[in-house]
Length: 265
Image (cartoon, rainbow, N blue to C red; front, side, top):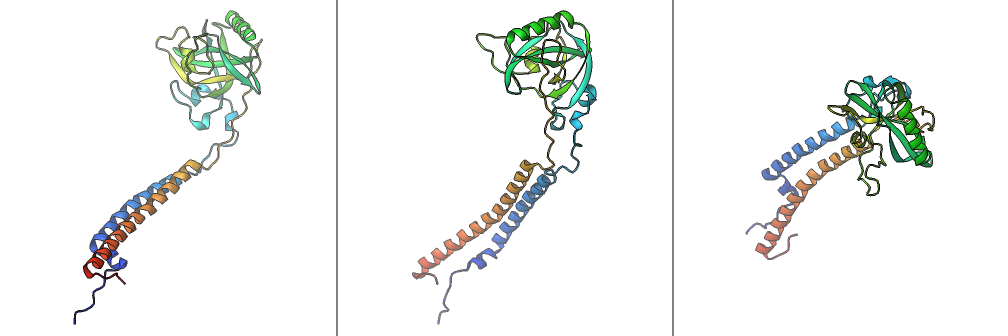
């Protein structure tokens, strides 16, 4: 009497050497994903955050940033002090500047803080273009070439914008890169990437409203999201192994049914 044949079970297929090897490969892949997830979690929580109110301590500009460097997040809005000399002809106007809810203009200048090193300074706000132009003319007469000590907040470059047809030299963003294109005495000049928003405006201008930046949180939620993603990828590696093994089992069951002519139990 011929013994009755049965199709393989899913467990039998999974315990075959081939699928054990695939499982081991998935374990390696999942382990890599788990390591990356752990790496992200370790960086999600700042165990040494900046002290509260650190941005309100006035520090020398040279201690905070070097020319050409990007401004790191903990230093955005840091109050700094720097001495230098105004460069004649470089008191320029930037439009679309808001003081609280009022739109107006900033008067800016090139402050030469060291030999062939400058920083863009937003000196003050004006409600209309005529007032801004008058203040810039006064600064040109009185301040150009004079020494000055400025205290203000260091703020990141706002980026450049396309020139307008009606005013190709007009600027509506505070961008040292754009100002540099109109400054004088710029040969081999090193420029700070951020700009300085002065806390005290000169005569004829209004103080720029520049509140203290929000305190940085100790939890980086983006890193936590990435860590969750790596955990999902690790789980997906095991799902792929299970899905491939199950597909193979279903194929063998179908082949058994075709050979025997009867549905598998």
